[in-house]
Image 1 (cartoon, one colour):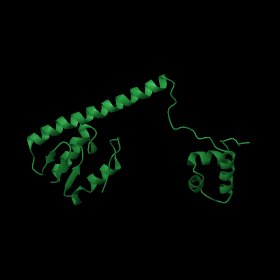
Image 2 (cartoon, one colour):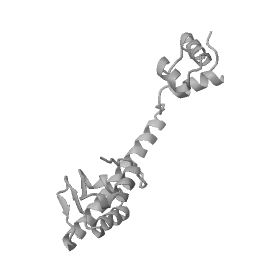
Image 3 (cartoon, one colour):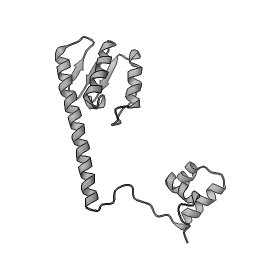
Image 4 (cartoon, one colour):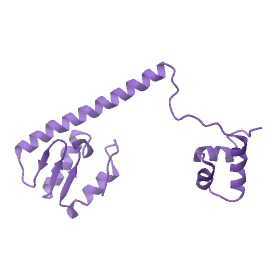
Length: 160
């Protein structure tokens, strides 16, 4: 099963499905926006599916497109595709507005920094001396790889 849930237009899962389309009977998605984020790409992909004689179905919208061309399906696709694109833009706009408001109110955004203890600091250095990789040290100490790297490289000051 291939999943393509990234917001980017260039999604690896979708590319994989489209490149293997000849080996599939068709495409079944939960919602139309899982297949196409923007109207142009959606229509291009659906035209490719149709040209290869495959079916497409979006369960939530009740949209079924058979191998046979149907003007009503094309009309519904255009409407649903436009609505999908509009909805994605609204979500992005709300997210940007929310981040701007939080920043204006002085809310610190991003991942919270974790205070390292002296024992963690020394443990990281000891594990590095034993030849463990950054990843292994990170897993054993329960610290992020960035934190481990910063301790090893000296970017994190030695704790008293």
